[in-house]
Length: 309
Image (cartoon, helix red, strand yellow):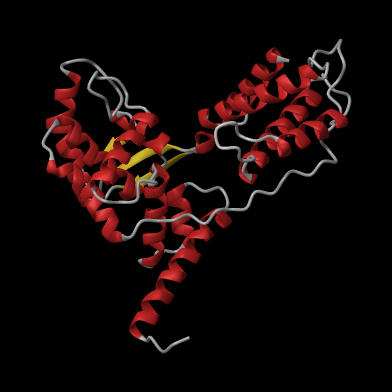
C-alpha cells in the first residue's frame, strides 16, 4: 500500500495543487490507516484482500475510540474529519486507477468538524508585537520586524511569506506590491503599505547582506546561515516576540492573518475585497470574519450607550 500512498500524494500535489502542508498531513494520516489495514490483513495490493466498507467503518470506529497517550484525550473533531477525508480521497484515487472495483467510502458520511471562530489580536496588541523587534538592532531583529510588518500588512499565510523570493517583491516605482503563490499554486498580487515597505527596505539594505555574508540566495527572507527561513523558524520567532510583548503566547502566524482580515472589515473593506486579498476560493470562508467585526461594533456601541440592549 505504501507505493500507492506515494502515488496518491504525488497526484494530490502535481495535479490537484495540494500544498506541502496538506500532503504532509495526508501522509501521516494514511500511514495510520495503512498500519490499521495491515493489522486486519489488508495490504492494499491488487492481489490481496481489498479495502472494503467494513474495514473503513472499523477504522473510523477505532479513530473515535483512540486516545492520545500523552494527555488521554480523544481526537478532536477537526482531526477526525481530516483523517477520514484523507482515506476517502485515497479510496477515490484507488478506484480511478483500477485498484478498487467500487468506492467503499461512497455511502459513508464524513465527520463534520465545527468551524472554529478565529481569535484576532486587538490593534493595541498588534502594535506591541510589531514594535518589539525594534528594541533590538541586530540583523535578525531587522529581518523579523520586516516579516511581521509584511505579514500583517498583506494577510499572507506563513508558507506564502517564507516562500517569497527577491523577484516576488516590487518596491519601485510605487505603489509597492508583492506577488505570492497561494493554495493550488494560485498567484495573487497584494499591495504593501508604507510602514511595511519601509521595514522591508531597511531589511534589504542593512540586514539581508549581513545575514548572507556575500552568499547567493534567491529567497527574500533568510536565516543567519544565509538559507531560506522556514515556517517553523518563523513560528518560533513570532512566539518569542509575542511573549516579550506580553501578548497571548497562543499567538500563531495565522493569528496575524485573522487580525488582518478582521481589522480590514472593521475599517470598512468589503467581504469580497478581503476574500481576494486572503486568496479564499469561497467567500463563505471569509464571512466568518464579519461576525468578529460585527461583535466589535456592538461592543463599541454598548460602551457608548450602556443602556442599549
